[in-house]
Image 1 (cartoon, rainbow, N blue to C red):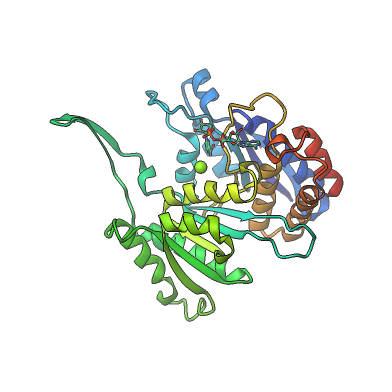
Image 2: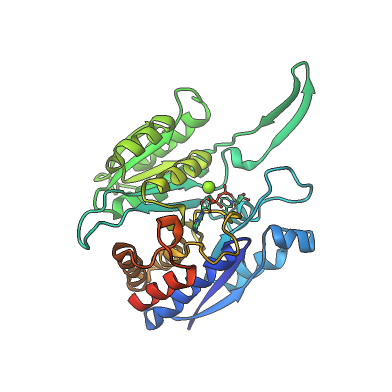
Length: 347
Ligand code: NAI
Ligand code: MG
């Protein structure tokens, strides 16, 4: 029995940090089935080389041969490039990875203490403005650009179920629904109502009766996140708000280079650091590998390899707490490989 893990480093620092995640998985040894890694390609560089950003072969191998996967980061251009579309957005759809789960946790000064920030953003991963239906026309106001924002009951319900399930599993059991239904009463209204209705779905039978529910408009949610992050436990949000809130929350704990995520569906899980390809530090060997290492742990945790996940997370926490080996984004002087070595020695 082996654990088959697809590796898609893609672009930029993805190529520097995914090998670190791989090393951490190898280091947990007998706590998981023997890992078997399958190298796969996708991304902007792949597109410039082959004309395809997400080769069909990559999708097929992920679907048919892998138990799980790790994705690095892509360098998507900000201008429109004919034929190019972000492979990560496409992969989430093709593998039906409808939830993006992003824990943002600070490390307490001493082990055993309560962290100041300990929340999880559960982001809907398949619709909202990211359906990418945009049109450009010319009218009496000059150019007119429009985008479709799709919110469905089905997607809102399943992300709601995922969020309630997660809230139930955490000590505080508190769920905050993020929306802007005071302005967008139809789209955000549907999201809000559908998530709120999850506890009374047929078959749920009081399962979530111990989960407390709050809601917060997205703008004031960001404000409160900065002023009193401790009020949040699980936050569930439509795609775009979830994207923005989780990057904002990353600032609270020091660096985007610390924040892991998993893209999860009912049948597959793909770990992915929240950060992008960081062209400003690419190739310098100083990218923080901890977000990717934590993404590997989060992926293993979702597959119920709890002990292996705990070992990786505890090692990362120790390295952060000691503060001797940190990359420059955390005001340290260490390289990617020095931080990795420190983590491996703790594992
Ligand atoms: P970014 O996340 O790549 O970088 C933002 C800032 O954080 C930069 O100063 C960068 O140096 C720093 N940073 C990020 N990760 C770090 C790490 N591990 N260690 C140390 N510092 C780190 O976001 P940006 O600059 O907006 O986007 C760059 C490219 O990445 C764009 O092409 C964008 O499309 C792409 N991107 C891809 C994502 C993905 O693959 N899921 C997500 C976000 C952006
Ligand atoms: Mg983002």
